[in-house]
Amino acid sequence: MNQHYNQNYSREQIVVILATIQDCIREDKFIISKNENRQENIDFISEYNLNNRRQKGILLKIQPEDFCHSLQNTKKGFTHEVLYVFCPQVMLFNFDGIKESVDIYTKFNIIDSDRGKRVVVISFHNRNKAIDYRFR
Image (cartoon, rainbow, N blue to C red; front, side, top):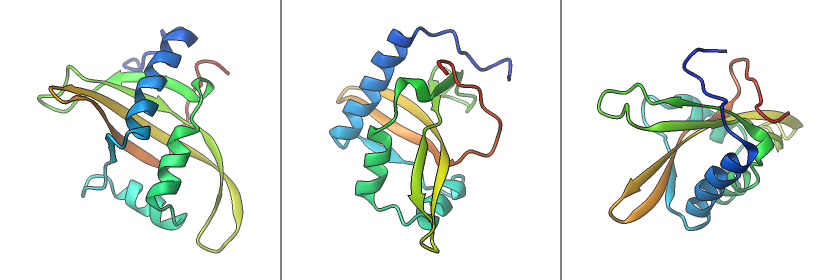
């Protein structure tokens, strides 16, 4: 595992972090990154024809057992931020209508602002690297 990854969390800590993330999602205080650096997210959403309601539904079904690790944001000006990685396994229909089990790599950034908390889903795509689950 990458030396910058942190798995030093109790299940209870992850329950609280995930509740914060999912509260933001329920309240529509979240976005999934779809900029030029996040083509994988765009392709994934397109491949599985995931409308906004379906994307939100997937994110709300993430469980503490799906937690992998956290890491420090390495982007200049954002190194104070902690990113949380979860990898749920979800049954989805691909573009050809074939149902398949998909490991979805999700990376969350919880942002505190004057207007309260919000979440940026930095990664929302097929798992493309080996992962270790903290609680499995």
